Image (tube, rainbow, N blue to C red; front, side, top):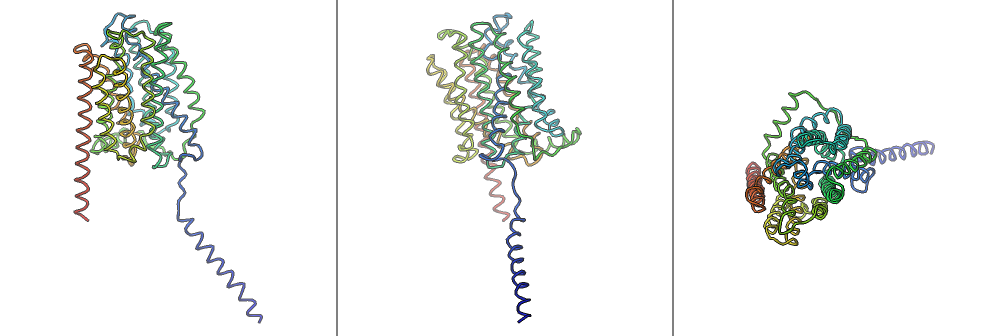
Length: 435
């Protein structure tokens, strides 16, 4: 009896220990993913912060675009010369986005984004005092270079801090902020310029951007998954070469550039078209036309659902087809049809941009900031080329010339996507043969 009484607790204890170990083992084997997800801690603050950063970026970057006819008149310059107040900003952004992405790898995404916004809004408050078109173009170039720290750092931040399944949606919200910034900047400048001139208008955008920059810094959660990289040029060059050797990434870069060529061309010269006969619209109404950017907000923020239904390539085909339809409809000398065309162009562009940019972050497994920076560089070079070439095409062939340029760019998007589809099928067949 005594022996029985002494063995029972030992057996029970052993069994309990076995149960504890068997139940604890799976818990220890499963790693907890602490990255943000919709509805989780910090996700809403992060989304709002980057949305506001997107608003500030596009509002500043394109603050002169709706005002080009007024700038042409004030300084006595042609549309092509005035368009450089936009192209200089986007071109400088394209040149500096890669170096600043490398800086963000060393010093952190949030730090670089904060510094970039601070410099850009400071320059934005100086732009209204430009004494000549040369000074205006120069200040805009500095502003574009400063803003280069935002796009690649933002997408890299999201890739590191947000769970993969929520990445397209999160980047879509950032792109939606771009569309709201582009819209609000153009609408506000249009109405303000009609009453007080273009200088007061761009100053107003500068003050709006200051508010967005302060809110961004207060809201954005501190990064938890950032790992500092190297600033050595050899490391950067090796990473860039690796990305440029990836055919899929190169196709995505080209798609982003071509989509932005269409968008930059259309929105650089639309003000001139609506100022001329048969429309002859006042500046405030022309600025209000940019309310169609709201369509881009919706199409960008729903890009994740679109990809879920059609796949990435199917979504790009749909975006290209929508943009093409918009370009063709906009040829009509009817204001409602021109507006419908702009709606379709805007929806197609923002959907295509959101799909392509999120695909870059999904494809790049390392050096994400550089991968995103290369996309942004191609994207803004497309904007700069579109603005300049669009103005030249408009000067040479009117709106039909600008539409022809846009159609050529969309054909390029579709061609690249078809090539990507064939490459993917060939890769799947190759894998099947090896297995």
